[in-house]
Amino acid sequence: MIRLSIAALIASACALLGVPRAHACSCVETPFEQLAAEADAIFEGRVASIEPAGEMHVRVRLDVVQTWREANAEHVEVRTASQSAACGVHFEVGRSYLVLAERADGEWTASLCGGTRAMEDADDERLSLGSGVIPVDIEDEETASTEQHPQTLPPRGGGCAGCAITSPAGSPIAPAIALVIAMWMRRRRIR
Image (cartoon, rainbow, N blue to C red; front, side, top):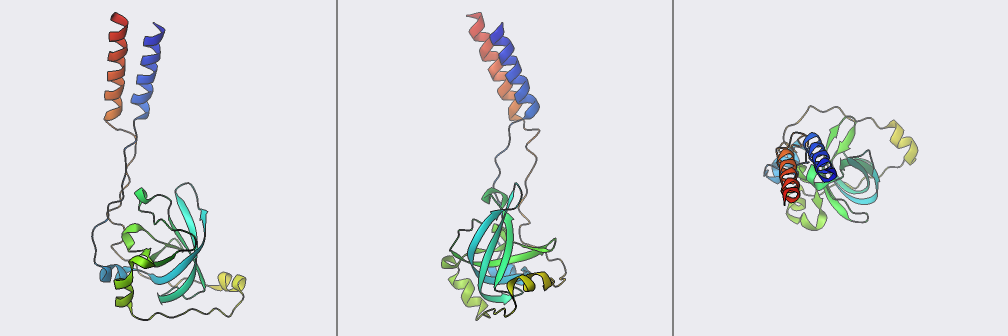
């Protein structure tokens, strides 16, 4: 009787909580030229540090090597999802990246669907961009960061339009698993 109660408890918990679905980033294949045209900022940056920014994101500080659009400071911070399944870019400290960023809620963001990639994988893209500008910030870093005001740009389409994360609740698998466990426990008890 105790086993049946435990099985019923487990089955109920599974049915109520649901089983989370696996998620993967799904990007619409977009030509680099279109991604570049839609990006608010384009720059080459070397990752200086990575810090958590909430439960689902990281904040990446990059030393700007050269810039093609908007990243006119020696250092830029970019927020991205912490998991590639949520379209986050997997940045590594010390590695250089071609970053195509968007301005969202007053901060730079990057996603897998937006075209950001490691520099060693961006030869063709770098050639199509041409020569960039090497940023030189002669102001004190603290003063510069407090005085910079982002330019207001109209919203742009594209980017991570194919990224959709759904709620894990309501999975049809959970009740099926609960039913199988309950039937298995009952069969064992009858024998």
